[in-house]
Length: 394
Image (tube, rainbow, N blue to C red; front, side, top):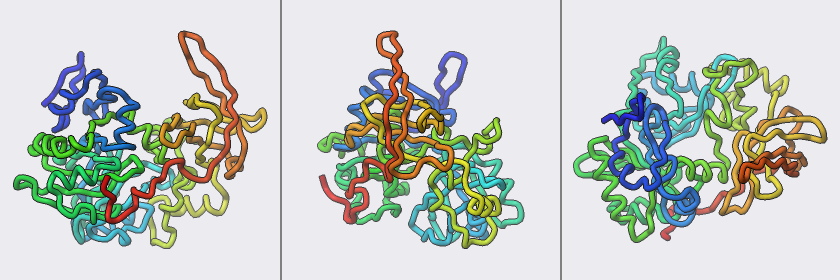
């Protein structure tokens, strides 16, 4: 189905009929050509659904690529920075992939569905690049983005909702694990993954069963105060838990127009995803050189004084500008004013004291604040329940 917005035809996800009916404030945005809700009723209340009960986000526009064939693992090891062989069947791994200059193209999750059967989920479209990299490998790559509907079910009561829906023993699924259930004659894949840093799951189903899945989930979750959430609430949750967003916290090397605007995994704080013990992979030589010569930038998390988010702020050390903020939010659960920033080396050691130049507008009046901030060593929200197995019942 298509929906017309002025002269632009936006795609609708398989859940759109249910999503549209619940979007009380009619706020929409675009994602990969699909119309998706920015918010349903109130951003903060939707955020608190994730942190206190269960929030449901329509993941369907996510780009999904099925990679199969005898060389599937060898191919993915060639294009990814992490060691793919360490992702067992029935498990999910997070990874980044780079160009030959060692600059990040995108990040995403890799689902190992079988011995030589993988699904790669990414923010940006990547079919052309994946196809170019497949030369010389016995693999088949299928763009199944439109063929799989998906929901993120996140929050303390998410496991209870799924158990009430009839997904028996779902509490035994480990973080980054996946399992399968029968749903009205179709395969329902459930992974213990998410973008909120909380206890949560992602549900993957054939599009023609999407509405039935939504209805059954919300009926089962009603006693647990289940609510739909939009992209604004999801963004707030992911900042609180320290997750980077492609296109926000870094520019894909494929899309960067100006030299120096892309970043390496080390410059994004993702060096732990780079396995230098692997044989050749895209960008390895450049990343080895960076390890010897040093990086240009350092990704940091800042604790900012006050309650004014440091959106798009410059960061200063004394009178010198040393970086810029990429994401910022006042995080309600952690009661912290958090900012992600890219700082020029050698600045950004844990404990460094800096200043954020913040501008905010109230009633047509702009105010400038020079807010002290400090580099902290980790995300401000990291609850134990996200790792517990069996998953706790709330």
